[in-house]
Length: 122
Image (cartoon, rainbow, N blue to C red; front, side, top):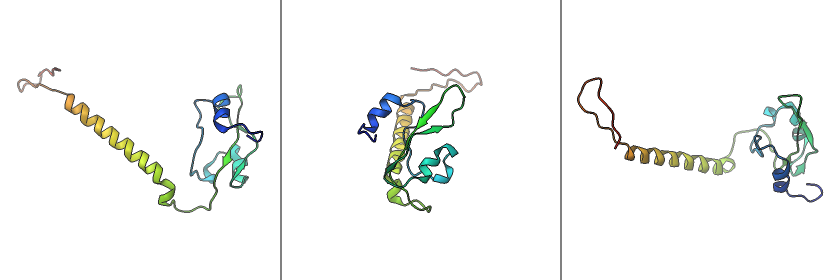
């Protein structure tokens, strides 16, 4: 990054697909100890590369962070979470619409009132 490489190209080349690529609005007191360089960095800086705690000792993971904003602890403002709320509401509405669509497609024919009634699909 310091030499001019873009974040996207570095992620494409070196990132682990199972790991998060970014996180926002994360309280620094909840970061793992290996993220100490992030906690000590100021807004607008790129941290030095630091080693992450790995689940096994055979493989090392390294990271760096771009600290885009740091602010004092306190309640979240609407402006901070507006886009996340929009995304979440959109996902919830899409799921509701999909479930309604599946319900419209379902056809259950219950014949008789015995406990051995058979369910049929069209």
